Image 1 (cartoon, rainbow, N blue to C red):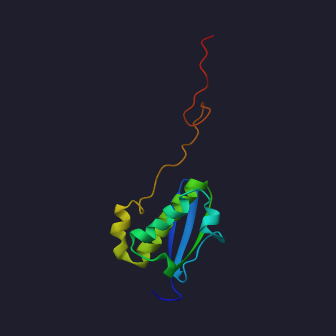
Image 2: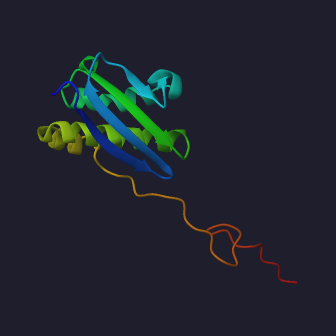
Image 3: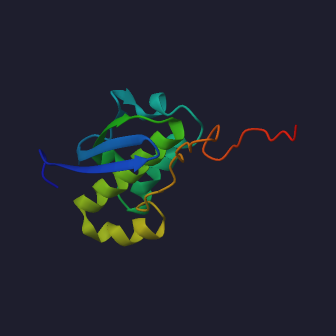
Length: 132
């Protein structure tokens, strides 16, 4: 891996978008300028994201990862970062596609919020029926 080259992957989930860059370095993982554990404070979120390195048989301490994530909530942002990291790893080494695919890291979750329909209160909730 070239010292001044970076590999980029974009991940999306619900309303969240994450741009992940991997470059050789000392193992720093920053999300929007913060350490990953400070940004994703829920138990297990940070480790679920970094599990992609273990599946790819790569040492996280040899790479610097910077993430810009926006939109959505905590879960959407976590899954967007997870997908972006996996895509960046595949761009770095095409041999990693198969193990990441089998572990479910390269699958984009297509579920998004359904639009509100006219005559309804929400996407599917109808007004209360009254007989009289």
